[in-house]
Amino acid sequence: MQQGRTTSSHRHPGGGPRSTRPEDGRRHNLALVLQSLYDEPQISRADLSRRTGLTRVTISDLVAQLIADELIAETGTTTGARPGKPATMLSVRDDSRDIIALDLSAPQTITGGVYSPRGQARHRAQRDLGTATGEAAYAAVLDLAQELIATATRPILGIGVGSPGTVDRRGTVIAAPNLAWHGLPLQQRLIEALDLPVHVENDANAAVLAEQAYAEGPANLIRIQISRGVGAGLLIAGSVVIGTSAAAGEIGHVVIDHGGAPCPCGKNGCLETWLSVPSLRHRMLTDEPTEVLAEAGRRLGMALSPVVGMLDLNDIVVGGPAELIDGHLLANAQQVVTERTHSDFRGEVRLRLSSLGDDAVLLGAVALVRRIHLGVS
Picture (cartoon, rainbow, N blue to C red):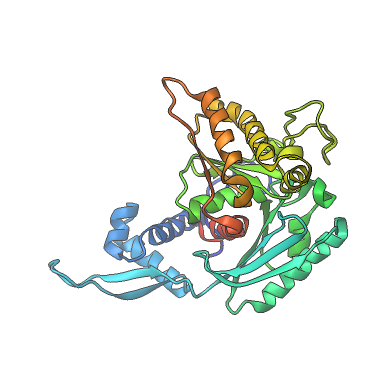
């Protein structure tokens, strides 16, 4: 199976719709069967037919291909009181493919891993980035990717990369000021250097995919990523919102204080100048830490409130260092959003710390590859 359903950020190269071909229908059906198997660990062909609405003949044909591709396996027969011949059960094979994941979002380090499609880490590695930017930072990313490829013991389904900054549909980093990347065709350069499928996505967009794939997140969700910078990933009906200029979710560069500190993007008083991990830690060295975190939370709440009101969201996940987020920052953000958006027709919005910890972007990179190549969300 070469490629299934894609996220909204990885469509036809022109960015628009294309005509449907017979192979697209088959690819869709293969993805539908695989999604059912990921949702239900043990299921029979007959139950797959009922769940998907496909005929039993079609299901038998699709299952045969997925078994031949080593993506699923027969795992025994049913036992019990049901009449008739025992049904043969099917399950996803998690031991037949490796996925390489890279997280470029943290301050001064880049992290990577070899994962199973279900998100099980098989190997982890890290590089100290220090103050490296530009080509030096790219060289570190390439070096880590090559190390991880050498570690993989199964065919590699693809490489997923979560990068800070604005990333377009072709995996070009339009701007990542903290890495001094501007117009860097990161995806294409890695494809050429590694000779493997590579998919580059904004780190916050990757992380919101992980919330749905590995933390049972809802189909409508916003996730704030607080790390080297501040970004947001937005899911609407299960699809990532990219925006006209591939800049949806760039909440970190919304100005919240016109007289505030200069931001690497060139403006003054961006949310990121308050809420990024380096900014928070720097402020906490000179000011009362509790008040710094409370004020950061209030500013986050002010930035989020219009988004919540416009899109009618009620679930917001915040990812980043728990010692900074889980407490005064989250509580004050919750209070401001509630005060500004609550009404008779809208219930209270829930802000919560992500359960994925430091692995959200890595798992999002895995989920990205899984969506693109297997059609599984």
